[in-house]
Length: 453
Image (cartoon, rainbow, N blue to C red; front, side):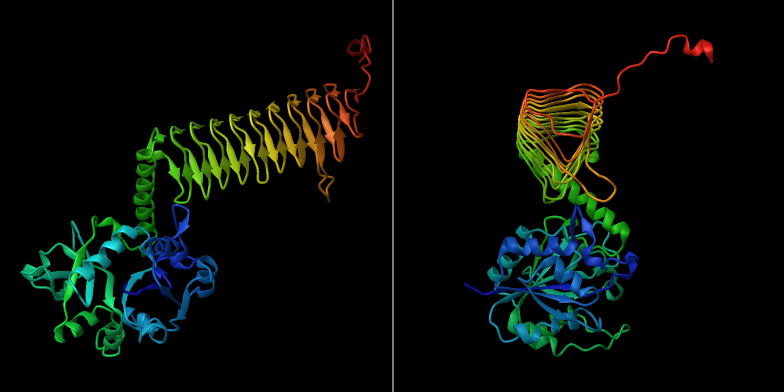
């Protein structure tokens, strides 16, 4: 089997982004652009992948990890110069090399695989990934011969009137014979207005040597879309969002209004789940089957089991078991775990706490740094008082306890099994199991008080 190598060009500063964030690290549907590109390559499978970095090199390495080779392009002297930085790693190896840009997040593994297949079928030394553009102005045109092979790639400014009518454009993604690539790169000059070394010049060099130059046309123009500024970033986000939403709908998820629904590229959703407009499912969230995600809900990096209903609520970095209902207007903060059949009602905040099976906090409560057992009822206005201004403390509530409305549980404190806390109590000491605890001031009525004042 032919060895496969890949080179991702990720050294450009991206000045048109006007951002402190390195260009290829700008996210599209929750994932940095260069991560989309590397993930697409991983779907195909390569023996080695080289990332050409420049500005923001350490940030790119931190994002992609240690599985790749990194080479530094200290000066940005063109795409040919960028690929040449991989010379020491790849030059003497037999096989094929795919070169692509780190700012093309919409490119799929299927298209890369098809590009390689066409390269091998035509026994080509270069295969250019092309696309049909509605308006090809500004793009290099791919001129094919009668046999379908590439005769030349001509820049727009150099094209004749007839050539400018050609809609098939060069996307700047290529498959090369690896050894010939690095041999030809050493012949590329910089006699041009920019004084740079251009990768497409390799095509002309190998054509003069009589080598076969082929082309594979991408299924869609949008897939080859490169991001150079915030406008293009927004367009890529829109295309990716549509692609993701369509994939989940075809997999059995109902999305009421796809245009108003955001799903991260790394999220997973089960069959027969219904997602209402304005929902945002972010990060690595996992949503089970037959869930209902209500309008304007936000779920981030959380695991939601089957048959869960979320109404206009926020869930971050938490785990929710089956048949839980949440909201409306609840906030499940990081580190929380809700057991089966738990009910979290309106205006309830849960932070770094667990509620076991069947427990409920129906409304207007704060549950922070708490461990709540099974079948516990937290009445309206229950607060676990977990912070003294310097340290956080834990509240534990055993199975079957009943906490009356408007109660304050001042941590650290333990409420025993089947214990009852009277409404309006401020509990500062442990409550034994099956006990009734009343901790409130005795009522005093002063008759005729208003009249005397």
